[in-house]
Image 1: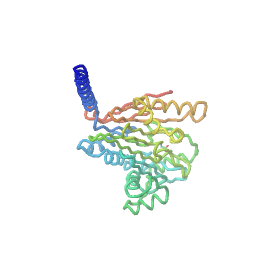
Image 2 (image 1 turned 60 degrees about the vertical axis):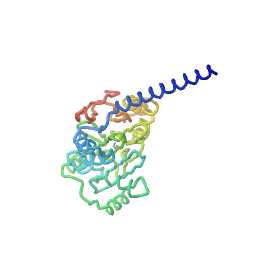
Image 3 (image 1 turned 90 degrees about the vertical axis):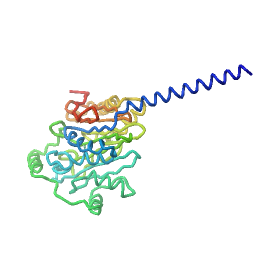
Image 4 (image 1 turned 30 degrees about the horizontal axis):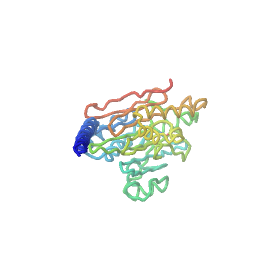
Length: 326
Ligand code: GLY
C-alpha cells in the first residue's frame, strides 16, 4: 500500500513538473513571437509597409493592414506594374489581378478587371459581400460599380508611351527586376497573432489580352494557413501557377521548413521545371514567407529581387533576396 502511495505521489509530482515545464516553454515561445510584422515585395513595399504599419502598430487587423498597404502601390502611377499606370496588355488595355486572404481562410479575388484603381478592395468586397471567391472581367467590373467603385482610365501617358515604344518591335520578353517591378505581395501578422495577405498587379507587361497570372489565384500568388504561416509570390505568374507555389511554401513550413528554406525549395522546383527551356533565360520568380512566430524569409531565381520588412525592431528596410542562378 505504502509503495503504491509513494508511486502515486511521484507520478503526481512528475506531472506537475511536466506541466510547469510545458508552461515555461509555451511562455518562452510566446515571448519569442515577433509581432506585429509586415513584409512585402520590391521597393514599393517600403511605402506599402509604412501604411500597413500605421494599422498594425495600433493593434489593428492584419487584414486591414494588407489591404491599405498595397493600395499605396495601386494608387501610385510611377509603379507601372500595379494598378493606376500599370503597363497595358498587347492591345493597349490595363487589366488588373488581385487577391486577399484572412486568418479564417476567407479569400476574395478579381482577375482581368479593367478601369478600377483598387482591385484589392474589390477582391475584399468579393470576399465579404458575395458567396464567391473570384470574379473576373466584365462581371468583376459590374460588381465593383455596384459597390461604389469609380470607373477611371488607368492608362497614364507614361505607360501609353512605353506601350507605343514596345509596339515598334512587339517583342515579348518580360524582364522582371528591381528596375521594372512586378506584383506587390504583402503578408502581415498582427498583435493578435493572426495572419493575412494581399497580392495585386497589372500582370506581365504586353501580355496577351485576357491573360491572367498567379496574383489572383489563391495558392499560386498567395496562400496562408493561420496555424502555420503565409507565403506570396512575385515574378512570372505562369511558373507559380504550374507549381501552386505559395501553397507549397506554406505546406513546407507546416512540415518544419523555415520560411527561407521553404521559399528556396519551391524556387528550386521551378528551376528544375524550366531547366533546358529557352524561357529560363528571362524567367524571374520570387517568394516571401512569414510564419506564425513572425520569422520571415525569401528566395528568388535570379539576382535583383528585394523585399521590405517592418517590425518593432526592424525599421522598414529592404533586403535583397538570395537567389539560385546568376
Ligand atoms: N506575378 C504577376 C503575374 O505574372 O501576373
